[in-house]
Length: 358
Image (tube, rainbow, N blue to C red; front, side, top):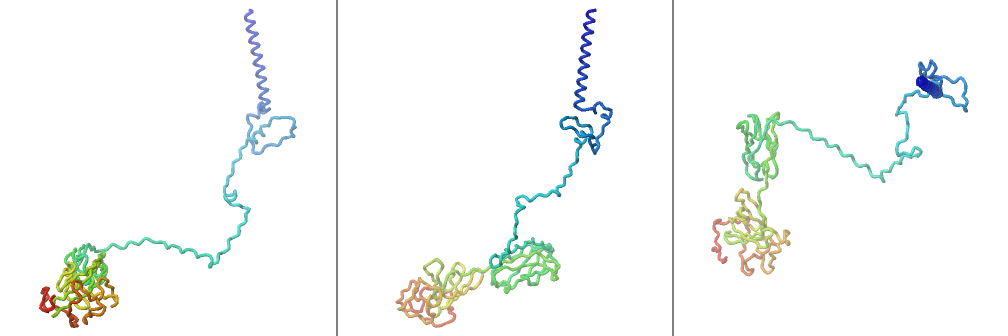
C-alpha cells in the first residue's frame, strides 16, 4: 500500500508541473502574438489592401503588440515599376553646370581648307566572256622595220567568217579550221617598235576573242662611234676608224669587214658610214662624230694637228691624227664624192698600186 501511495504522489506532482508549464506557455504566446491567437477570427484573418485605423491613440509609454490588420499592412509587398527612360542623369564626364559657347568660324585665309575626300574605288565590273578563244600567235615578236610576215593565230571556236584585226585594222584572213587562221602583215604596220593588239572577231562584232599582244622590238644597232677615215686612190681600200665605248684605243675597218660580230661595213664616206646587219638585213647609218670645235662630241684621244693642213674632202673640226701613221707622211686628198664605193669590194690587200706605199 505504501508503494502505491508513493507512485500516486509522484504522478500527481508530474501532472501539476505539466499544467503549470502549459499555463506559462500560453501566457508567453499571448504576450507574443496577442489576442488574435486565441480569438476565433485569427484562423480566418485575411489581408486587406487598406488597413483599418486604430480606434484610440496608443500611449507612447505603453508597449502593445500590433494587431493582425497592422501586421498584414506592414508585410504587404508592393510591385516595383522600373522605367529606365523616365530617369534622367547627366552624361558621364560632363559638367551640367558649365556653359559652353559655340566656336567661332575660322576665316579661310587663316584656316586651311579641309582635305578633299578620297573617292571610293569601286571594283571593276567583269567583262563578258569572249565567244572565241585565241590561244597564241606565231611569231610572238618581230623587229621594227623588218619586211612583211605571215601571222598565224591558234585557238578554238573559229568560224569561216571571222577576221584577224591587227591593231584594230581588219586584215584579209584565211580560215584553215576551227583552231587556226592566218593573215599577212605588211611592213608598214611594224615600222615602229611597241606592242600590237591581235584579236579575232566577226565583222559585225557579235563574236570576238580575247586579245593577244605582238611585241615589235627595236633591232640591234652599232654601239661604237665613227671618228674618221683614210681615203685612197680609185676609192679602193678606204679605212674607217671607230671608237668603242669604255675603250681608249680606236680600231679600223675596211669595206666588207664585219664589225661587232654582225655589222658589215658596206659604205664609207667623209660624213657617214653604212652598216648592214648580217643576221636581219637591216641597214644602219652612222654619222661621223664631230669634235668640240665642230659642234659635236669631243674626242680627247685624238687632238688636232695644227701643223698639218686639213684635207679639203673632210669637214672642218675633224681630228687629223690617225693612230699608227706618223703625221709627216703625205696623205692623199680625195675628191669630193657623196658615195665612195670600191671598184673591187673583195680586194683587201694592204699595199695597192696607188704608189703611196701603204
